[in-house]
Image (tube, rainbow, N blue to C red):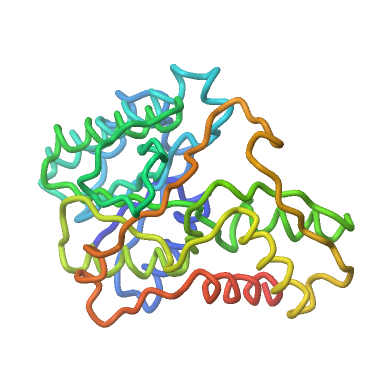
Length: 290
């Protein structure tokens, strides 16, 4: 297949290019922000129309959760308008599209994993822009594949794992919120799932994260433990839990954003989704040997 991947400078886009290009199984064209101005939907549509492809995988997004509260127009243009422009181009080409979305489209008030048909109710501008992007996608291209994920970390780029490793290297104590609950997702596992979905021409809405549940505090404790075990950390940095109220941010985060994987488990034949601790260990080893 010929696959276009946007956002190749990001964590997931970079991982997908590596995976889908491996062994020359697919012809992959990667587009980064200098090649695709996501703030201009007219240019986005024209750019995508200039390519021949079977699948477009959109990993590009405005992801600055706090800054989005001030940059409302820009976040909407990137997360909503550019998605609709891509969908129009894909429809005109008779091709297929996978859009990566987020747990932030939910309000975080549930106490059980969010299914794909759960009510969309974002509580901040970033989530609103992504939710409106989902609606624009499905209205323009009903056959699209929409994949929601959460807490994404990979070997390329900045993320929570690398931040905790850096801070734990420099400090003897860290405080991390313990009342926001979700599931870490590792790009190697997410890319594996995406390859299976597009290979089987899947469509509709799916959720994917690694297995298991954690708070950001749990995640940070595990990062420090794995960092010590594999020689990335030498000192004894202590991780302490604090409530969200002790770490105020401009944008409100969902307090519970665990995504149900019942549907995608059935679609991923022969692939047992790894627990997040396994994904973390694999990432730590990749960083170590990177």
